[in-house]
Structure formats: structure tokens, C-alpha cells
Length: 150
Image 1 (cartoon, rainbow, N blue to C red):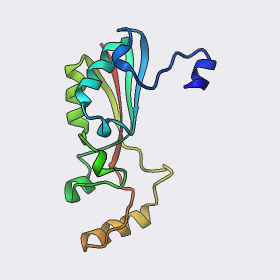
Image 2 (tube, rainbow, N blue to C red):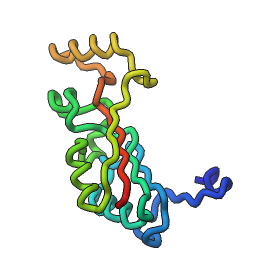
Image 3 (cartoon, helix red, strand yellow):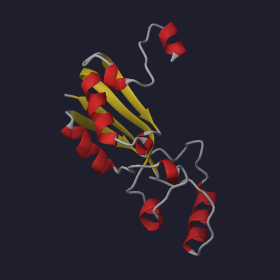
Image 4 (cartoon, rainbow, N blue to C red):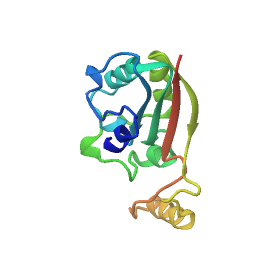
């Protein structure tokens, strides 16, 4: 935040409920929405502080529609004692639409990413099918969602 402020970028980490409506161009949730105890309240507040045309971006967000989550109900990036809501692209998109944002794109970064080891990840996926549990990244486990305020 300090580096952003030094460059003339008005940035805040928390306190979204104390911000003036319509003042920000961008609100970012990075690997955090699943840990917020009132996620819909936070989405509403985030939408409120965005200017028209502003962006709400979700990075490193777990995906409840991933094959791994559907099979086993967990993902390596999750921290069960601190999780409240694991979104899917559909449920997050519905919530954003209800708060006046339109999803522009949803991406599933795996291929070419720093955590992708396709051969090892496939082996660990198969091992998990027979009860051997080791953490692994996998396509569509995580998502990025980019939404714009109307």
C-alpha cells in the first residue's frame, strides 16, 4: 500500500465500509473472499465504493466447480478453519450481478503458471483416487474473475 501511495495511487487494505461511495477504480480480492465471514456484505461494499466503469477483480480464488473440489470437497489452497464460502464462477457471478457488476471474463490460470507441474499433478490426482493424499495444483482449481460496474 505504501508503494502505491508513493506513486500517487490511492490504496487501502481494509476499512471498506468507511470509504466514500464511488471513489475507486479498482477493488481487488486476492485469495481472500473465502476467508471473509460476511462475503456478500463485503461484495456489496466493494461495489458501492467503485466508480461507474470501475473493476472488481478476484485473483487466486478457489473454484468450487473444480473437479478436485467436487470429488473431495477441498483444494490445496484452502484453509478449512478459516473458510466461510467457496465460490464457483456461477455463484460469484450471480452475486456480482446482484450488486450491479457484470462479469467480463473468468480465467482459470494453471497452464504455464508457477504451480503447474502437469505430470506430477496428474500422478497425484490419480494417487488421490486410490487414497494417497498429497497436495497438488490442477486445472480449474483456482480462478480469476474480472467484473465491471455498470
